[in-house]
Length: 177
Image 1 (cartoon, rainbow, N blue to C red):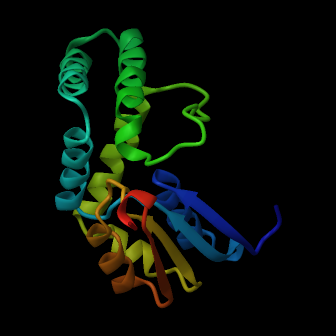
Image 2 (cartoon, rainbow, N blue to C red):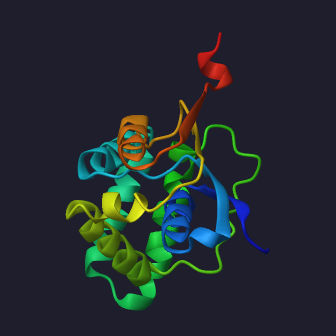
């Protein structure tokens, strides 16, 4: 598309939408962040805990075994093990999916780790606030009550560095009766 446009990102894509808007202001006129990732280490740990708690005992054991294997496996196996772990945890992230198929070209465990470690470094040294403070467009956060990312790890941080933030909190049918 041609800018400026509305950019919608979900989960990690929401974080990438923020980086894109901060670095290329001419591209975006509005951001919509759906189930955004969190912006601090404490809430990142909570996200992981929430996901693990939502799994059955058998799934939890399988994820723990896969994570242990990931630390010791040969590189070609890591992508397969990573995919299996993500597939098991899918239901812990999504309340009522229309489709279970993720639109991924391929799972790349090592690349995922490199990107995640870079993000953590920027996050933990305070660089995110400096980066995202460059954004001067409306940002809408759509966040569901089943989302494993605590809203407390998203909204306060974004309000501290963005001038125009609107939050829409969505309740699942399970929680509305």
